[in-house]
Structure formats: structure tokens, C-alpha cells
Length: 351
Length: 109
Image 1 (tube, each protein chain N blue to C red):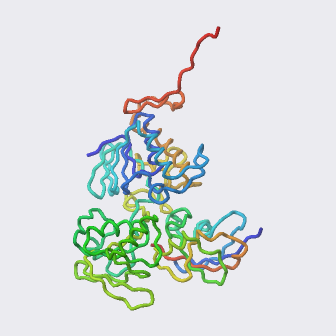
Image 2 (tube, helix red, strand yellow):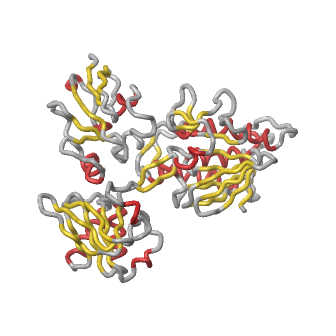
Image 3 (cartoon, rainbow over the protein chains, first blue to last red):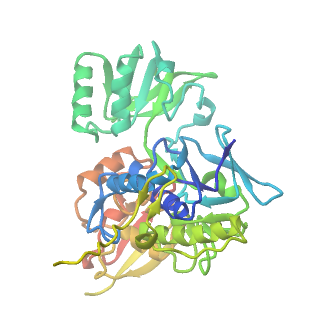
């Protein structure tokens, strides 16, 4: 069981900044995120895109903003459960919570802050008959262990970076790799496109374009896929695995079943006070929440995180007095023993 | 600058006549959101960067639209339910040209 003061669900910019504001109040944080890396959308969808409305930054790349936040919160030693989705929540008699992930990891905290953005990123699935029947029976959307494909036949569908990268990687492991894409052109890093071309020329990747997978064959496990090349009759390619890689899309997911008040695919919160949800002790901050006048902006998430931490402190220490202190005055005292503070002025006579 | 009239058929098949300003640097996806013609969180998920295809629509009138840029074309190559008249509505700026435009929102994926 992982225990912490504030359990943050979602490691996007709002979740990460919460660690800082909590740290100033000596509260420890643990973060859960469905993605394998911190940063949320900024890291997953648009790391190379500039953002122009972070106060004090005329422009900053989304990926750099995440790197900066990670550096800013480092003294507060946040811990992470990555690549796992928060699945269930249980409220204990003392008012604290246990959150369990889809992989069974349990987390215990007196305060839960949902900073889940638009939800957890789930693979986009092609619309094929009986697709769900074959899931984990030869159809996989995420490659967890490439060794599963050793000496097996694999069909990959998609035209982006992950389709290209996995085709290249599996070319050395699988007995046969077929890459199917709706266009002749691929969108990916130039060197991956070149590498696939090279492997195709060497006969290590069987490239079928412009084409689409139209059906899956098999009894209980995938034995083949039906592929349709533009303007031609469909044909069968025998395979042991079919891996559709069409990117990820966010879904609110299991959080939607936690008994929280939901409106417009977002969690309703009290924005006049502290961004608490209808369940005391559970807060929702950043893009995942809604209230009159809500704007889904990173800068608003930062503000919400700051106010939420003050309320969380009062919840955890109801009798302990505290007033907000400026970092310029109090400095930043990390849990790792580091201390940042403004240099003291020197008083010395000039003669 | 004048406003334009648009005819937007939502995912339930209901047509809405809406008025969109041409002087606010809006795009079609934002117009759909401003009139709440698709539930929040199911359209414009990436914010309008041509990176998610949640705002895919089918253009059903004969209007000449701005040409597709590489990003949009590549995204549509990976999207589902794509037809000849598919566009990402986030990539279509509202101009006076669009007056009378008819479009249908693609279903949610």
C-alpha cells in the first residue's frame, strides 16, 4: 500500500504543480497516471508545440513546460504510479480514501485530487466486427512485451510514429511483419520512414498501402486478417497478431462511476471556495472540472491547484494554524534537505 | 465584417441554423462548441491542433474551402469513418465565404 498526504490522479501540468503548492505546506504527494510518462497531454499529444499564455513565459514548448515543472517539484520528492489507470475508490471510516488502479496497486491518502484532464488516454479502436472477442486473443492495442511476438506473424495497422517504430522494432523479433496503412505516405519522424523503406526493400517488412484491415479471422484466437487494397478485392493475410495503432484518445473512464457529480463530461466542483467535489475530501482541478465560467487553461489549473492545497491542509490538520507565505519571503524548503531562498542583503559601511 | 449563416447537422441528425462571427478568428469546430452542438469533451479534444480528429465533419454543400494542409490530411488518413468530403472542422476558419455552408458532424469515436 502506497501512503501519502495528497493522492493526485493525473500527472499533467496541473497535477505536477499541485506537488509544489502542497510541498510548501509540507504535504507529500503521489501521482497516478495512465500514461507511462508524466506530463499528460503536453507530453503525449503536443510536446513540440509552443504555448503562449503561461504567465511570464512569452513562449514555451509544452514538453519544456513539463520538464520545468518536474524540476520545480523535485525538492518535494513526488512519487509516481505510471502506466496504470485509477479504477476504484473506497472511503474509509476515518474519511480517508483507498484508490486502486487497474493493475491492483493500492494507494491510501486523506485527500484525493483529481487532475485528470480529459480523462485517461485509451487506444482508438478500429470499427471491426467481433473486435472485442479477439482483444487479448491476438488483438493488442499497446505493445507491453515485444517478446510475445518472437517468431510470430504480426500485422500492424496505422500510419503514425508508433506504427512505424513498432514495425521497425518487431522486424527483428517477429517471423513476419506486415504494415497496413490507408495512404502511401506515412507521418512520422523522417528517419523512421526511411528505416521502414529500407526494411521493406530488404523484404523484412511487408508493406501494404493504400489499404485497410476490414475483418479479423479466427475462432478464438486471431489466425488472419482481411485486407482491402483501394479498388481491389479483399485478400487474407495469415497472422498470429493484429496490432491496430491509431493513437490514443482521452476518456473520463472509471472516474465517471465514483459517485461524483458529472456535467458536460467534467466533474462539478465548488469554485467559490476550494474546488471540492460533492464528496468531501475529493477535489477536482484543471481541465477535468467544471463550474460556471470554467476555462480549460493550464494557468487556471495552476490557480485551482493552489487554492485546493490550502483547503486540503485544513482538512488534514483542522487544528493547526497556517497562513499563506510568499516563496520570496519563506524560500522553498525541500523534503530532500535542499533550501532555496532569497540572498540576504549585506549591511556594510562604505568609507 | 459580417456574420455568416451555417447549417450544422449534429450527431443525432438534427440540423441547426447558426450564426457565426467572421471577425473573431474562430474555426468551425469552435462554432460547434460555442453552440454546444456536441457534448463537451467529445469534440475539439486536442484543442484544434489537427491531432485527434474528434471534430471530423462532412461538408455537404458545394462551397470552396481552404485547402487541406499536411497535418489535417495526415490525421484524416488515420481517422475512422473518413469519406471523400471529410474535413477536420478545427482547420476551417470562419470567413464570409462560408455563408450558407452545410456540414454534418462525424460520429464520436
